Amino acid sequence: MKAVAVPPIKSPLQQLGSSAFSFYPPIVNIERNEWIFRQATWSEIQVMNTKTAEELWIPRHFVGEVSLVGEPVTIVGLTKEIEYRAGAVVPHIRRVIEMPRAVNETRAARPARQASIIGIRVEPSRNSRSIVWPIAAGLLVCVALITVFRDVAVTSRLLARQPDARVNLPFTAQDDYESIVQRLGPPARDEWQGSRRHLLYPAHSFTLILAGRQHPHYVGALDSNGRVIHSVR
Image 1 (cartoon, rainbow, N blue to C red):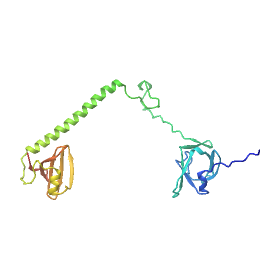
Image 2: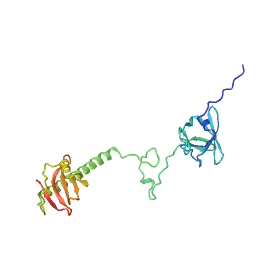
Image 3: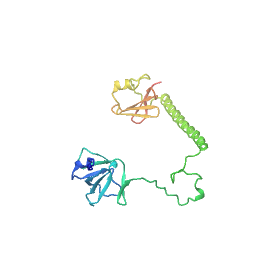
Image 4: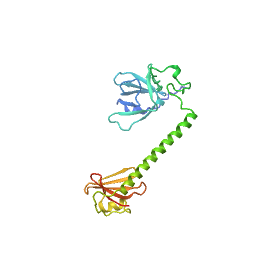
């Protein structure tokens, strides 16, 4: 019986004809990323570089889909990054580069253990972590307490201070942001300083102060020079 030749499976690149296209990601070690389809076999696809006229055979399983948009250039996807080496294309492997050592670093100064990747040291031991973490947590708690006590002290001084220039403002300790906006409209600037909220009204030449992080309420007002002009208990 005479064998019948079976034509190879058509490649998606055949629909491009003689139109140029680009690979994504580009083939490593090739400067110009512009190609033309030449031919296809069962296992490979041949393309030609438009600048160098060099022809490459690329395995079919590396070639993906062709983009539907052909402007400014048609894109042919690659299933993985490949590189041109010794006249053929092979999968590109990114190697880990060793970090340069300090000039004064000696072999004796290096740690006894190193990670499997060159130039990257292993994590500190469990004993060192057990010491560092409590110290770090204690510092964070101290910073938080200092901030809270500072805001409380500033607010207390604001409540206790007598106004330098008396201004009869229609606000009490029960007023909050919503009730103030209903009377004066939205402020020109709304800022938080610690646990205090500053509502700036330049048209009235004063800034209203609200205290409290969860439900801030009105405590007083400052003029354009930062002097207390009104306060409530």
